[in-house]
Image 1 (cartoon, rainbow, N blue to C red):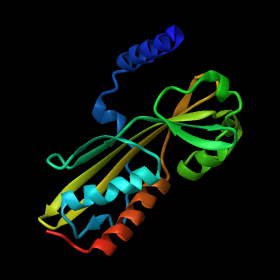
Image 2: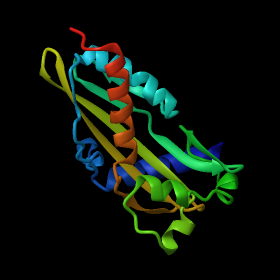
Image 3: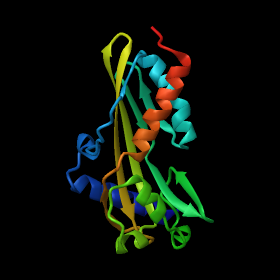
Image 4: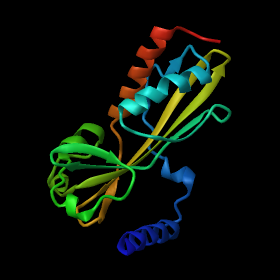
Length: 184
């Protein structure tokens, strides 16, 4: 337990020293076509929640007033051949057997190479911005950042999203909203 607290304090310290501010963390935006929906913000928030649950990603904060959905910072790694999304720093013991090259290839623009084999887990943050175009039209922008780590918890680099998860969310949202129809 003391070791975990030490790791968290160390990470917090180094994050503070880097000068990274909240607005800089979410720098990775993917251009999505057809990301406007004929629905109000309340309906979009309501319909996006089950999609995020399906992705096994918990919401940390959702505000209709600000048009913002912030997801909990998540860690993705493999345990017993199963890809898991968790909300606490992964145990080093499990990371020795965690290889997520297939996941990295699916969700990032990283070139496949020697670095892929050394990636044991990711730390991921996502923010969904809902921009009210008018009373019944909302534009959805998704900001997604992926940091890769090896089994020794050494940060390898930030990986740019290739849009896979963002497009999946938009596609599922479009399906759900077409089933409910426009609402005022």
